[in-house]
Length: 333
Image (cartoon, rainbow, N blue to C red; front, side, top):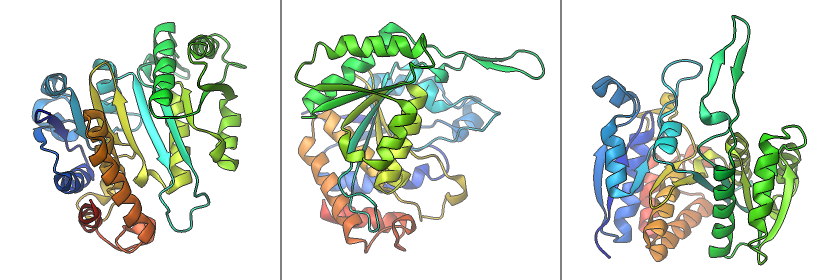
């Protein structure tokens, strides 16, 4: 293989720390990666006047793959989400969020292995909002046949490629009869092309309850943007929290990998946060690049360290620093 160049975005808050931790682990795999560093988020806003400079998009389009730390999104004011903008402008239509039991001491479940496939470009995250008078706010939920069919097909292809047995379409078509009705119709049509993969449907509120009570019954879930965001966080809680939750944003020949958690600015610079989500995101990146064996080594090393419980961060019941945990993982890689 030629030496891949990865666009590297440290992000805000704890981003530089968890990215540094990931590089420590990646270096031990022996994969010959090169990195092109670019800035997005608050640093970019100060330097370029925008949180998402064109040079970031140009770098990712050129390199075709990026590893990204969390970027701060202001609540109810300020700039719109850099994460959403990246997904929309690069057409990274599939957000893949695995949740797998890692042996966290005290976890309620030991057998969770769920992948949430979330439509990434439309729905309520389309950003079509307005104030319709002083006391009324409106938001438009956009669902299209094109986006619904391709996310459903992505989920079934993912299941088939990874030896998964079942895809569950999650919806609210009993109430949102047009938007989720269209999503569900597309899911059913696509499912008919995959007779080797079991297909079922769940209403989103029931799915939330089912995941808490009997998560082992579920395999791959496919759903719309907001529902996927919420349910994937729920699944992360089943396996130990957002500190263990990686993700990949996939398009046609282009991908950005990042932790699910936010930038946690109050912890910035303290070298105490869990780096696992970003390390596992880097493993997803290696698998995407074709380095499957090296990706599996990272995942195995993470599980060994978490299960041992000796060199882990505070959220996992330990007292190790971010870098100490990363080095313990790297040593096992």
